[in-house]
Length: 438
Ligand SMILES: NC(=O)c1ccc[n+]([C@@H]2O[C@H](COP(=O)([O-])OP(=O)(O)OC[C@H]3O[C@@H](n4cnc5c(N)ncnc54)[C@H](O)[C@@H]3O)[C@@H](O)[C@H]2O)c1
Figure (cartoon, protein in one colour):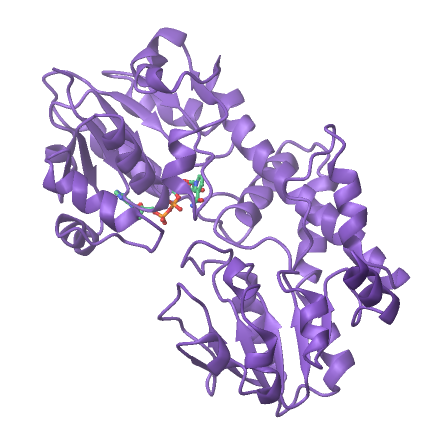
């Protein structure tokens, strides 16, 4: 019988690994420094909200495939592989804070194992980190670096359907037990060095962030030209060299990964005294992009001071309740600074620290008891809300769609002024009659 797999760190990545591996038939052990989190997981309560997560967790706990421990020594005992998925947030200077990872490796190095597990680092780390940390476990083993590419909102699905499996190690043989875990998936495997595997992850995220930023630059150009981005980016996306994924303008990229990973890549480039123009430009444009929503709002309602603003969306993207580094939060804070009060609705976020005077409400329509509405998360369900159900509640009759999720024509047909990003103003009469003729 196969020995269990241990996952250290039960956040978004750790939980996806645990459930994904349990689905593939492995017995998994989970450990987290947060004993409270472990206690809740034992009772089948996931640490965050994502479709299907709670059911999968309860199913695997009930069937004995998932076990949770509040001691790392207990969790790794008799396991074949220990996968480390702890957080690596940004320091002030943009470098990655890998202290949690160092701490875990130092702790593992003190354990007396009957049989040593393969240690796999799955957290995102700057190039050179695993080569630097390998001596911590050298006495009895070696490190494998295997980056994670999942997206929150479809984490387990992405874990089980990766495009590729990247494994870095000092010798390919060390990575073989880890690669065997995924044999059933039949995906391409790239064996490479530790540093290259770290670069694959960092450069992939920086590229995706840059692609979003490019779409935003195109949309801003469309706004200045008074034209709509939709056909432009759709037309570009059909070119397989470009591709349509991530070519959607909005308020910019937020969340726990893109910004921190681009900052980390830039910091590495600065340390190595090599060029970093694209990393820097990506961060600069993204810093400015949320202001587009505020500018559009000011253009429509004038002063923000004393305005009541309805907000749809708080999570950094649809499909998750994660508000870490959410640009929606940043925009809400900026609006509050300028004297607005907000009524905020998000289908997945039930608790959030909001500026004084602003509050979370339980329905999208309740949030529109305001002067204007802004949309800050790309939840598809917002598209389905009938604008006639709230048009009468919006006193200034203005909708600013920061995520371009609403149907501009339907909003306009309810007598509201619509502005998206790269979709300036209400559609023209010609556009409306063209649409109805189709
Ligand atoms: N969230 C994503 O979409 C995503 C995708 C790919 C890669 N990543 C990377 O994966 C890593 C984890 O990300 P996440 O979003 O799951 O983070 P997270 O903050 O959701 O989870 C990290 C977990 O590690 C635990 N932890 C911290 N220190 C610990 C220690 N010393 N021992 C044991 N547990 C400890 C925390 O309590 C927490 O539960 C990061 O490096 C991130 O950049 C994240």
